Image (cartoon, rainbow, N blue to C red):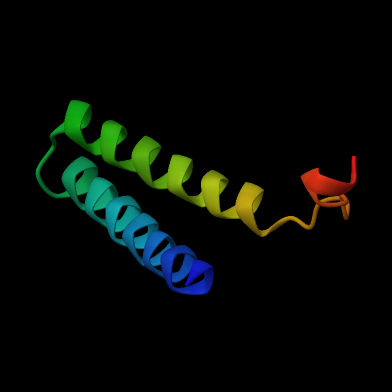
Length: 63
């Protein structure tokens, strides 16, 4: 299930970044374009953080 969510986040990040570039270049809408690009970069950052392996911690019952 996590793989599906990360894949959807990557697709949404690519779409937001592309739409932000389109808004900046074609429509000359600087405010919305920058906000969309930032939102896409935040999604990429979330995927990168979620995909990093962490330490193997024992379950809570064993602590």
